[in-house]
Length: 136
Image (cartoon, rainbow, N blue to C red; front, side):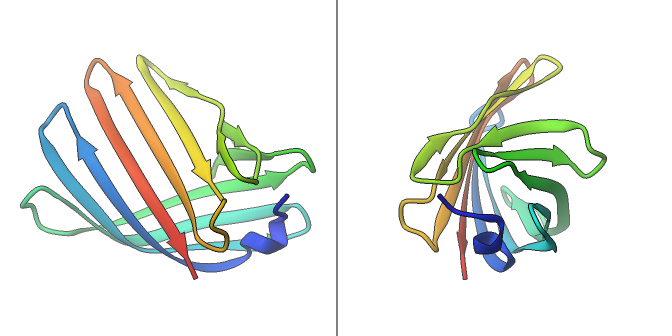
């Protein structure tokens, strides 16, 4: 099983977004960095997102990852719960309801140190898949 130290550092991040509701595709290119000490890592991603033919925009996300020994508890930067996952193989994380929307994630660590996260989001005004690839 992977530990906090395995994730520490900077990752190249590329993301493909397929928005079925709007009939558009998008991309994100940037970096993700995990820093911290002990079992708590601070996750920050920075890069450029482009949807359809639109102009690229700067995008940033922040989360906190807490390694419990059995899984990783991911919270938003403000400490609100997001989801959990087991850092090994190909695994589904817990679902995250957000209002009428439902977020589902699958992580794949089987090609470590390259890994992926695939999010499927459905709701009354959302229907998209986001595929993120992380590599050193």
